[in-house]
Length: 417
Image 1 (cartoon, rainbow, N blue to C red):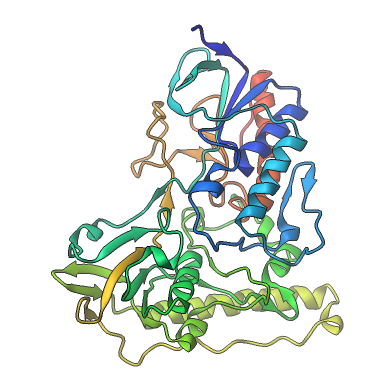
Image 2 (tube, helix red, strand yellow):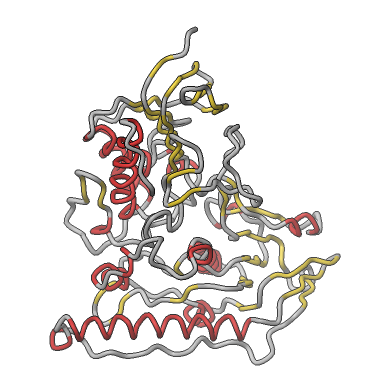
């Protein structure tokens, strides 16, 4: 079968790939979106059952489309997210080829040859929008677990009943780890939460969702060339937030109030013993400090914007309570630990990308989504072009910028990122 021809191939039909599709279509550029499963496939197949978005519904905005329901301050569950993204694909008439797995991308001057399990495409430009959360980033030390302790990652975990009876250690104290620690503990299983660096924030501050404040005062729109340490900004842990009907704060204090035991970062496994870092006090103090700096920024902005008289007064939250002497070791079996849930993040899968665009850590080299290879672009990564890039709300502006760059490149009017 001869290669099919198009100007642009977008790989991935999640919110980022669809946003790019809309912006490319607005410029009259012919393209196709290749998706290994269905639209919003990772939301359908790679998330735990109770997951809800961290962002309020009003944040669900994509080019030419936005949340239109009657609960703007609520938080979508997975079925609602899938419906939202699917309805967006229909609304923009995205040219999606579902059930099409990309197996290889190679240079094929001029442009690229994209091989799939349903034939090949030749294109002048390509957009990598397959997502940042493809492969669980489980540390190598997981291989040292005793055989009688279940090891499960968050791509596989669906609900507490997936776990054996007995104690559970959740490794990772960011958004996923804190949510799963609470869910599993409420199922009746004793939970130990092992946490290192994390970002603590209140769900609501001065009567507004914290993301409302971050959006209003411009923090979410901070661009990649405005931050002092971009490398650091692109690896910051996810916000320690959860989306619930009661808009409750889920931080380490809330978890310990419920009975979750707190330990430091898992540093090693030796026979039946877990070894923990001694930095728990320091990482919690640093998280408190950064949260308070952010709240000070919010307060200063509210004053300048003349909002103080319409909002509750500024206030601060209790510091994170840490055990006086956090344990440095724990006998897992003796403590009744029967499973470990690895909430240690994800990494993208580019095993099919055979173009030399990777740095020494295996990451795609790019400048604000413009990859270090003519005609290649990247979407959906943390702080790609803005602080909000990895959120649904951030995809639209990134897509508009990159579609403009792509159009100029196709017309021979190449520009910097």
